[in-house]
Image 1 (tube, rainbow, N blue to C red):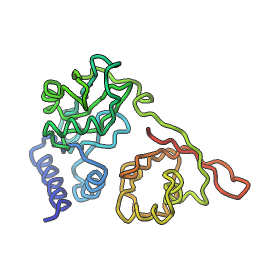
Image 2: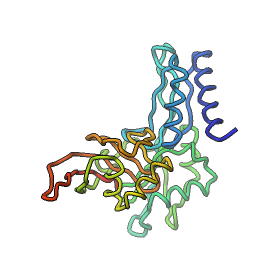
Image 3: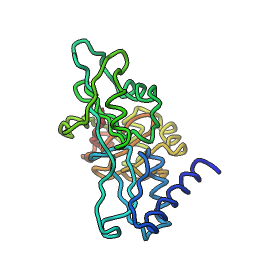
Image 4: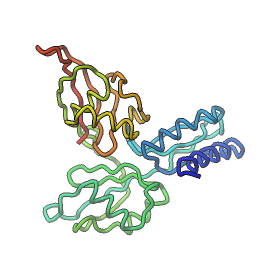
Length: 252
């Protein structure tokens, strides 16, 4: 049985358990490919409502909750916490990156499914994780790269506009086909852009997109595994050469 088949079987088991026992069931944090598979599989259990959350708006890694207040008769929040990892003295700290934080977590032997998005703001890391993992991380995550850190449960988060920094860029495309926009945003050839679709690395609002000619719509978030993600903000007029002016916001 392939990994995809095993995961699909797991989703079906959770749905059956939620329906039979009338108890909420939760997955671990899912990546974009896994979320896409979950959404496909959910068509097979239309009688079980579900929701997705990563802990805050616009999270890429998300947990699925099977069940609803209407179905269960009570509400149960997602078992997600956010850990704040902060160097005690910033002027002596390394400039931390997402890779540095993830590497430190993996060195602790943490399973990837217990960790959601990792965001950095002013060299402070905000790590979404499962409830069960929160206590372990606050006591055991003491160093990232060469920098000592102190960890605590984040009681509040910086404004989303600060955490989710978007850098606007304007590009000119022959059409608003998704492959054309991706090629311009990431400075790729059209052939390289098409290969991303064949490799199933392109997602629109969290859903796998294999249609390279898909016409992008305003405010859709495009994720390209290995390259990052951007929001399609606006379509402008035509350039002197007949190209379409579009504005996107790259997440940085």
